[in-house]
Image 1 (cartoon, each protein chain N blue to C red):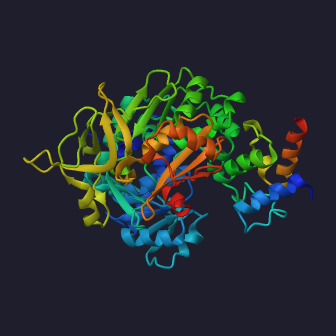
Image 2 (cartoon, rainbow over the protein chains, first blue to last red; image 1 turned 90 degrees about the vertical axis):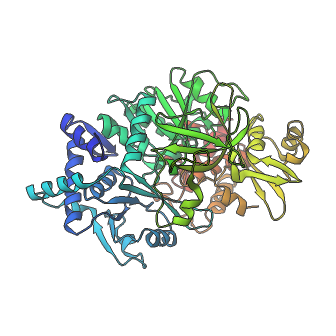
Image 3 (cartoon, rainbow over the protein chains, first blue to last red; image 1 turned 60 degrees about the vertical axis):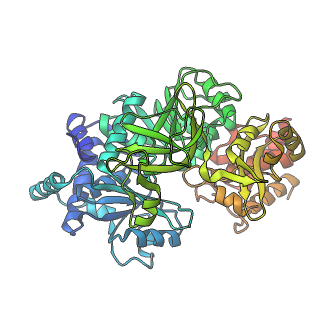
Amino acid sequence: MINNVLDFLYNTALTKPDKTAFVMREDSYTFKELKDEVQKIGAALADKGCNKEPVIIFMDKHPKELAAFWGTVAAGCYYVPIDSEMPGARIDLILQSSEAKFIIADSNNIDKAKSLANFSGEILLYDDLTAHNLTQDDTAKLEQIKRNAIDTDPIYIVFTSGTTGIPKGITACHRSVIDYAVSFAEELKLDENCIFANQAPLYFDAYIKDVYPTVMFGATTHMVPKQLFMFPVKLVEFLNENKVNTLCWAVSALTIISQFKTFNTVKPEYVNKIAFVGEVFPTKQFKIWQEALPKCEFTNLYGPTETTGVCCYYHVNKKIEDGDIIPIGRPFKNTGILLLKDDGTEANEGEEGEICVRGTCVTLGYYNNPSKTAENFVPNPLNRNYTEIIYKTGDLARMRDDGNLIFVSRKDFQIKHMGQRIELGEIEANVDMVDGIDACCCVYNQEKDKIVLFYVGTPEVKELSSLLRTKLQPYMLPNFYRKLDAIPLTPNGKKDRNLLKSMM
Amino acid sequence: MDDIKETILNLLTDLHPDIDFEQETNLIDSKILDSFDIVSLIADINDELDVAISADKIIPENFNSLDSLAKLVKELSDED
């Protein structure tokens, strides 16, 4: 039985030792090289007495960062990746919340790590750890640590922004990650022939979709240098040069390519599978992709970090037309979804309810934060017979008659305005359908009771507002319009609603 | 300084008031501009100078300095 994520890597290092696992620019690692680094790091950490505790990983995106992740796991600990560009004040909050005693930094980030005023633990240089001379005793020790580990032990903590401004540390265990990686790979039909281009940063959980199947099957992942996402033609050329065939990308990364008419110059030649995640794919942009790659399989993914990556999928099996909605679909195997209404009962077909998730994918909760955990990880109200924890996502959906879930909006985006219940998502969906609109985001100012629409596109405000009058109920019409050059995004590629709110 | 260059300088300065764009020649490699800036710039140049920069021209060489960007925009506007 596989009960430790290291089993994936260790097995593949035996069956495909010399195959290329991860590539970043000129640096590449085979599975065997990766395993060797992992074991050296694990042994060096264990020597320092690091055991069953969080280890902060403060590194640039690189295969070495993955080796640091798994080296931490090899020492019986769990990794806490931090965006090296994050402001120091926020890092302080994470250090406080995690109570970590160790930081692993690469040579690019070691000085910044040393400048963190509120950290009193030990800062370890990556290259020092991998200089460790691995002895037979070390290997035996690592084997013993692994033998004693259980699959409900944590593997990582991912810090996401909390509404109160204090980051929340979502803590996942081995079992959740194994369950997710296996069921995701099965549904997407991934195998050793996959060549991934990894877009997602390693400090959230979205990288699991390409990184874990890579070690599971012995596939290959090319890490895309972040700067390429500024240069759509170069980005597609990168995919072609590396014969990339599988993308698990944020919608915002895919639309960077489609909105500049990149396909007139160059098309991805090998990509035959695209899974997209993060937010609703604007129909117009999706059509551009579908027309450019008619043979490619597209899959919509949905899920919060609290349920380990994603929990629902929908294979887009027809040509999408204007006005179509791409469902978030069905739960992955071994995951259950309940749509619960405010009164705690289940929504009927067509009725709106909050998406609540059950199963192994439900994570361990927020690190060092039992009260916040208890708010969102709750006993299943439909089960009075034994303990069953479900995660309340705060997302609203309804079930279509074909059994597919349709995303409605964030529960927090449901507002009361002029006495009416309004979904900001519904306003956005209508704006998105207008000709010449590239992107939009609707925010609500509760204090002033005003709806503000930010949009990108050719229509002038006057034109857009008179058009919306023909589509929306009067009380749903935005009170203010602001045309922007681009909708600002958060680091994980979602529309930055807080920043927009501050621009109102 | 000609009009095109001055307009672009103003657009760049709006994005990052703290940068001396007349001196900086490594805007991309030194990570001064990010992808959000590039998207904004392309839209602004389209609005203010009526020049559309197509995907094949969105390459680091054209965005690394005020001069290279101004040169690109001049070439594109001469083509019209």
